[in-house]
Length: 288
Image (cartoon, rainbow, N blue to C red; front, side):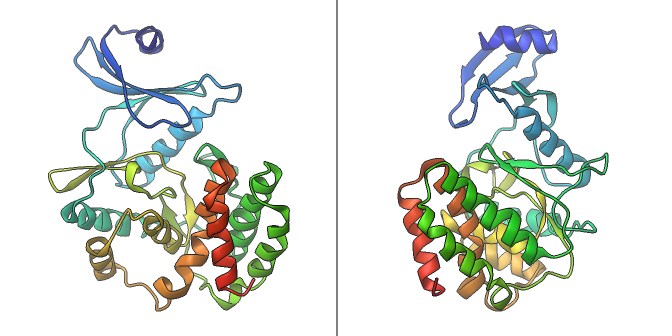
């Protein structure tokens, strides 16, 4: 089936294929084409396929940064075909140090406002874990994080029945106190947005590709915080990153936990369970 789908899209014979691991949102396959190229095909046959947004995010990174990402060969809502990039998600210290250099460079790329606009200067909403991620332009990072990340995803999780509604006032209490804890960055920075282990491929001490982005312009600290939530990056990464872009005091002690409320709420919306407890622990820590 996958060979026929890719053949019809690219008008070239597929001589071999196999399923790949991952792909909680779509089915993922490795395919070899008759001309020798290797590609990855994602297929989403759900009622509301959104793979074209992933393709657009990869294209944005490819054209606006030097971050290594797979080239998009074909993109539509139900089918995304990309170049195959070899590598594994075993992030040894040399790979982590290289990732730090690449992300520090990515975070140097700026825009006039937080959020994201596309080539047509219209709001470009993206995805994280297959969930809608609104990116309306904002002059204030703290306002953007409060309204478009923290409270937006909390509302989505509550509507889905995954977050107890009685937690919403506690989240709102913390959201109204963010000025006490967070720092307004001098400029917005382009971020990958979904920085955890399986979205990074490495080989022979180098990063070969970042995949599955959730891009927008924000504070790089939210990206760095997320990278610690599931143990993606450790000391080798942060030592190298801070040689290039030193972090303001208080990141690890205070701001990291506040920023990680967003990925915790994303996981709460998707899976519920223990992630709700993680949200509760953070709220309790900040007296909410």
